[in-house]
Image (cartoon, rainbow, N blue to C red; front, side, top):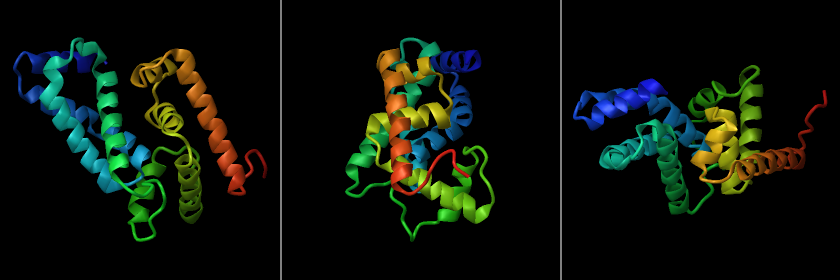
Length: 191
């Protein structure tokens, strides 16, 4: 985190190469966040480009370089929301014509205890369906906590809400996933 703060400061002081270091360091994290929020590889790639273009245009307005990661995640989520609103269909719904193998392989890197090929793809489909039916706030809380790995405090900062609200969104989101899994015929904790 301190390294990012230093690189941001160097860019603000005029070192152009520092921005490339920022992009290289954060690109994969932003891609993963966008992919989990939108469920589509091409959209996630577009969001990465849009996010870093926004960052480049407005980084000079960043008051505190130490808050860069929170600021970056907020920009990414705003682009994800705008992308989702511009679509008429639910982007998390599975598209049979998509390259599911490529998308699934990328997501499986972040799902613990993934088993083998077809079982993993089936589990991935089920998790995506369970997340798709959640509200924006609940899905965002789960993705930021479980897939991006933010602490509850960081989650509250990114979602611009009190810590108690962040905890509530995460709790209710996880309960929603549990209900959706049950509705899909999946029982947790059973063998």
